[in-house]
Length: 109
Image (cartoon, rainbow, N blue to C red; front, top):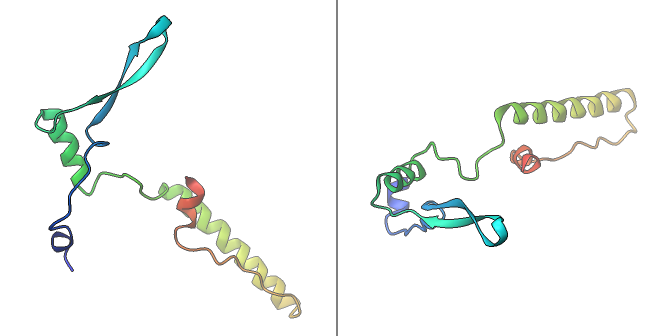
């Protein structure tokens, strides 16, 4: 099923895309972040919406590649050590960690 067909009648919530925070001096000169809504028809608003709808916008993406590679490498080394221990002693129970492909991302965030 194509992405266009799936999203045909979907409505988007652009509040968090079109929101920016400006620092202002508040009460007793404490700096506060005040939410500022950007109009969707402005050039900056159109640019933010274009980035949001492109495939380059990373909202809740994966962990960086270097972290995923290190994570998988440590997992593979642990599994190899468990199997090597089992080969030396067949009574030793093999305890490999059944992680999913998202485990590195969950560990990163």
